[in-house]
Length: 293
Image 1 (spheres, helix red, strand yellow):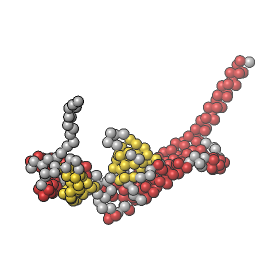
Image 2: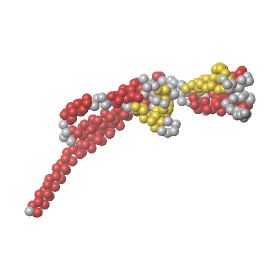
Image 3: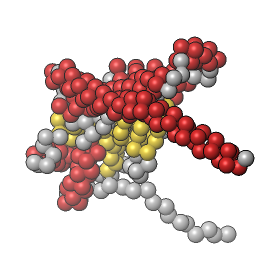
Image 4: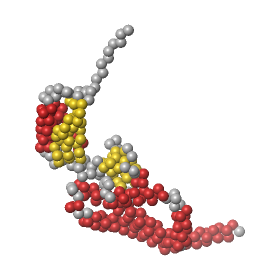
């Protein structure tokens, strides 16, 4: 009895092994080929479309080469994500077919489930549509410095669902495209220097104007900054008076994203010039008066 049982078990194991070997011989190789083929197709398609984008995005459509590169990187990011989704979705369906599962009923049931989950997918659709409009309208590009929902940062990626921002602290923010109401692009076309400084009431305005204009012109002549300054920082006007002194407006224009670097150097040079010409920069102070009964 035990010998018969052991013999039957061995026979069953052998049959199972043969079935597994047959299945592997018939399907495993095909599945591996599908996976490898999907990988190759994804890489080739992404590179081909990327080359097409590089050729079709003309230089004359953008004010600078940097703007063109940002546009290309943005389109590359979207194309890469879209191709990846499509290729692996098709590969998954092919593998399901290879396993002997009829995808017809599966697709039909997926349609019914899709209708049932339609309301739940509204946020995804909103994110996707918003992302398409962001890219088509060229609202911002990969590499731009923008502000979204009180978050400032550099755009690292724009996917079909989210915008990825890296702030100055190194934090990475994923913002759903559908939640974006107002976007402030700080590096589109050009940067603006728009500064207000306060000097003492006894300051000679004509001398102050000459110092500011001369400092801005000197800065624009420096090799490190001359290619980034479109309109040198200059005295614009006296904007008013306050409890500290006269308020002065300084304006200038730079290439995109360089306004902060130029502004920092401008303030360093103005401080030295003001000290040299004894121009007072008032600051708020508090005087404590002793209380007397």
